[in-house]
Image 1 (spheres, rainbow over the protein chains, first blue to last red):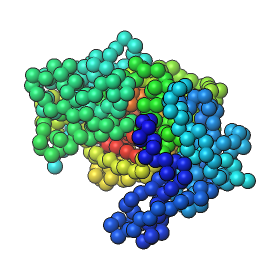
Image 2 (tube, protein in one colour):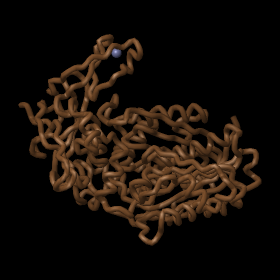
Image 3 (cartoon, rainbow over the protein chains, first blue to last red):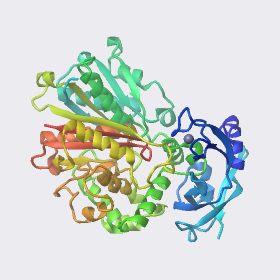
Length: 130
Length: 387
Ligand SMILES: [Zn+2]
């Protein structure tokens, strides 16, 4: 991923900045600037997500693309944040410990690197919060 | 709107075709389809080609013109258009051809699909395929394609009665059918143990739950129904063409284990054809992973949610069952050259309806369906064909 493409998303990837529609109260992560529900009547403001949530479903990835190969096996999950939106992320835990419904919290981690001496990408992973 | 018919169909063999180039693949499929329809190249009014990622797989874009050129049609200046919707590119290519003829704008139109996947290594192809999901919010975090479908499988098995063995039986059945298909990548039967003992790719999915990396191309020719008999004694009618979209990410879906785009496209297709699921004699569904066939059977309305594992075990979806599913071997055994798959499905149903499906022929087949999915369900194309 190009540096500019990654840099644009740093507020979201590092600090979980999303948006909220004050008209209907829905939360969006990643941020949307247009509410699909209220459309032009929606008023969108920034929202800092706490990042706490629970695992909806998960897998243990054992064959990955080159960027993630060294991490295998790793737990990957869909997480439902307490505010409502769902996201996909890695869970920092043993493959044996992950389960549906598990409470998780955000942790700041290295996500991937462009080769051995390339750019290192950081972002949010999740860890068990129980 | 005019009625449309398939008047010719052709398909290369599917597999890891190290000795065959991208260009040779589609030229071969196109020539087979034209020969089947008894057509000369200059009679073609337009050409559509489904292709997911030639840019990543062979570093070539501008596929429409390339195909027209190598098919010998450059001097006729035939309009040629590439259609892209990840793994549903072929299904959408067919739909575009049907729309072009139905509208009255064109008469004789080729719908093709092609993918050459083995010119890059496995890591690079895994990464290219991940582009069918959301690169920024799934791929960046480490999602793989099998990983996304594995999360569907986990969710499904948590909520509905589906055993690991029933899931494996989908692959066993599709290999049984593939063993009876001369174009299939894997023409051998496998046992339940083979699936259950294969290596884990993304829990709970194992290697034999996954469709392979494949090279291949397929092409069909469509024409107005009232001209079809100029070219063939066995025109196959296009009874419905439907398409639907959903969120690009899996996590934003209303329900992880239901492909709402399949539900929507299926309902639209049945309404357009004036038919219901019980009218369908056989269906080619998008089994990129075994769990995908389970969801597809339910989401198209062939059984209720949670029943597909049981009816698979009971043999309902087998070649001799009440609703044969994936008589070609499906993506699992016939192979999955991404952009070609949707056209291969139409090719298979055409063969079945003509009674030319050899050792996997469904006796008395009158009406068949195809179901082609892009990504984890963000695009779905459904077609109903009949004699
Ligand atoms: Zn709103």
